[in-house]
Length: 393
Image (cartoon, rainbow, N blue to C red; front, side):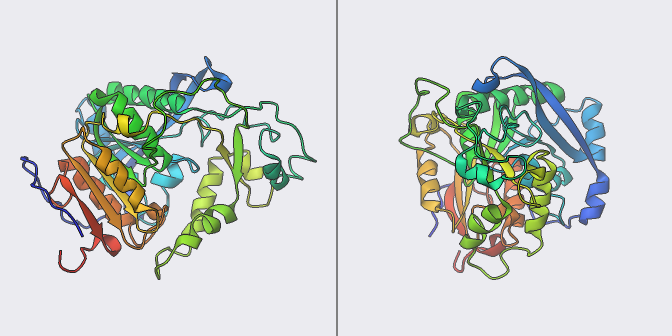
C-alpha cells in the first residue's frame, strides 16, 4: 500500500534506464583520486592531534577535466558515508562487475566522494593497533597471532563519539565545497552512516543539498545532548570475522532465490582486508575486521529529525525492520520533500544484493538530479525485485 501526496510544484525529468558501459569500460573512463584531508581530531583517544581523514574521489575523465578547469558541479556532488562496521570503499566502490555506486553516479556526470571516519579503513584508528584493546572474547580470535594470551586494555575506554563523526564530516564537506566551488553537497548514509549524515544535516542545513539514507540508524527517544563523563569505560575496538559478517549478519536474513551473487562475499572480504593492514594479518588465515567500539551517540532523535530541511529519500529492505525507518520518515517534519521505499527481497546489505543494488543506484540518481522518486517528491512506496512496481500500482 502506498500513499501518493500531490507532487511538488517543480519541473521534473523522469529518468529512464540507459545503457551503461561494461565495468572494464567504466573503469578506464574514470579518474580516481585518493586524499587525506587535514583535520584536528575530536576523538577522545587522540583529541587535538592533526590527522588525515581518508577521502576517495571518482568521476569520469571528461567530468574531472571540467571540474579541474573550474567548472562548478553545483548540485552534482555526492559524499558517501559508511555504516558502523565496514569502511566506505567496500560499501560504495566495490570493484566487482557494476556494483560500484560511485561509478554509477560518476557515469551520470556526478563528482562522487567517499570518506572513512576515524576507526575505519585508511583513516586514523586511535588505540586500535594494540590487540589488548578489545574484549576478552575478541582476544580469543587473535590468540595466537598476535596475542599469546589474555591481556588488559592499555586504553580502557570507548572509541569515537557521534560528535567526532560529525566534526570529521564537516571538515570533509568544507574541503569538498572549497575544492569544487559549490555551496552544498548531497550525502549518502548507510545504517550508522544514516545517523551521522542525518544528524549532520540537522546541524548544517546550509551545507547539505539532498539526503539519501539507506537503512538509517535512528533513536526517536534518544538523548539530545552528550552524556557526562566522556569517554566512557569500555574498549576502543571490536572484531568481526568473515563468518560473522557474511553468514551470521547477512546470509541468515536472505529469503529470496538468487538474492546474492555467490562470488561477491569473498570479493567484499578481500576488499575489507585491503583497507585493514593489521586486521588482515591477525587471527585466522583470512584475517579479522577491526571495528571501532563504544561509539557514543546522541542528537539524532525526534527533535533533531525535525530540523532536517534537505529533501530526504529513505530506502530499506523488507528483511531489515522497515517499520523503524517509517518512524524516521514520519519524524522528518521540517522538509518539504521526503520519500520512503521498502524493497522486497532485500536485507541490511542490499547494496551488495543482486535483487536491489541497481534499483538503489537508479533511485539515487533521480533523487540527486531532480529531488523526485518516479516523478514524485513525497510518498511511501514498496517495490519488488530490481525496483519493479507491485501489481496494481
